[in-house]
Length: 184
Image (cartoon, rainbow, N blue to C red; front, side, top):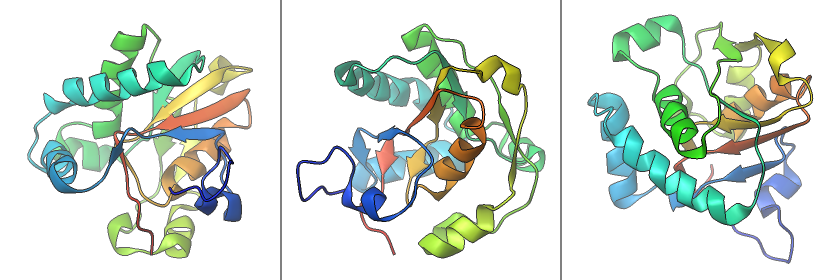
């Protein structure tokens, strides 16, 4: 999001609580990026994950951060079966190959939620409350975690996931291919 001063944290995050240390998003969610991400998820174009991961990897290399392990935003088992893949998991696995880091599942989605795209910031936060559960938490103790999602809009999803990871991790960072820069 835009930054109006010398801060390293965007104006939106300065005014709204977030549960991750920093978000890294190389692209804006509009135009061809938006079309490509929609096609990736909705049209089963899994092969796009490899190129998306390269873009994120190149961006992260410039940031000089050190991560120990990668995880991803989960989706319900039913949704994964319907779509045939979890877009964030696939992106995380491609990123893991490039970064030479392990990718593990530490979160599961346990509650059906409304579609986020039609909700405002507060509604998204309420919608996701208690939607995720932490698993395999002993593996993240004192680790720097990179949480992968495909798109970051209001940060509600990555913040809710980060809140759980932060119970054991040293730091939680998040990344996505793109960021929405207009929040309702």
